Image (cartoon, rainbow, N blue to C red; front, side, top):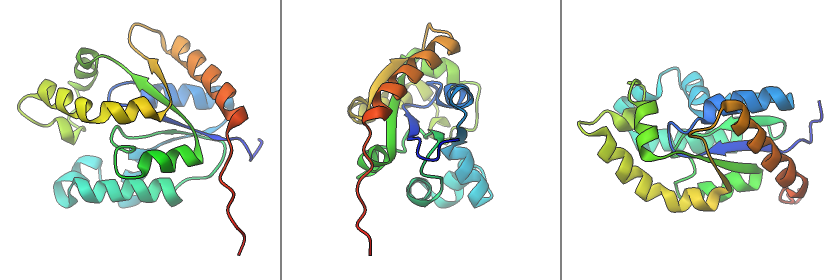
Amino acid sequence: MNTECTNLYLVGFMGTGKTTVGRAVAARLGYEFLDADHEIERLQGKTVSDIFAQEGEEKFRRYEREFIEHGHPAASQVVACGGGLIVGDGMLELVQSLGVLVCLHASLETILKRTSQSRARPLLNVPDPFERIRTLYAQREPIYRRAGTMILTEGRSVAEIVGHVLRVYQRESRDFQRPVVPRA
């Protein structure tokens, strides 16, 4: 495996298919797949829901930053990022400096349908999940639009989405330039 292969980061709102698509893309590329939320759970020894309940969202966002800065290899990874990972100050730019970003997108109705069966989404454990989705998406959409190529995931097969992600990744990874780090 080429250790100089640029990482691919899948970003976008919860329920857009980042984990499902990420696993399939990683398999096709021969890369390792990492789900940022699962890695944080593994490192912290508790679920995302427990982190939110016991430590708060701000602490969870710090764990996300630590994972992006130091918690994963710098090459040959497909990383499914949590829906809010790129939203914090400087996070979008940080992730963009590390690899190619592809933003997965779906309608709010599709997101509600895909997330409604899960209690593992602490931001949706509210009386009106659809209103919460609308509010959060309205806040995050401008950042998602700056993140990278947006790919619609509804009404398409996983194979079709994977093919589109691979085409974008292959095109953009050729031009990706890692920042030059001065040697001490």
